[in-house]
Image (cartoon, rainbow, N blue to C red):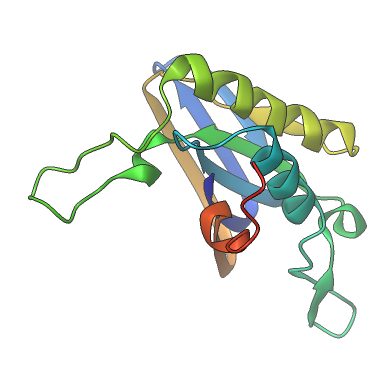
Length: 155
């Protein structure tokens, strides 16, 4: 799994130019599911995200976890995080999981974050969405379970 996580003051998603969902301070998460991903990657990544200490403490240092900061989350599915741009000028997406595999893993990630007490809003898998945010910092983190779990391939 791959995510691009931004610490935000606020974020929103507009789905098919109609429905708008929004959060206050917290994380905007673009989440991509790879063909090789499974429940192990979801649980690992949800644990890392929900405990990532990148919120400012009283001294202004990145020391607080999202739960300590009252963070909310907006999670948007984004298969283009698996774009392969090496071969040509038109990206390939064969490493991205197909919807029948990706949707349940995306939903499990959201469920895991909610289960840890976070308010989580979502986009809509496969829909055209417009996403906006007011970044805080900016602080942006990229996580890739292929890199994070390297050497531990017990799938």
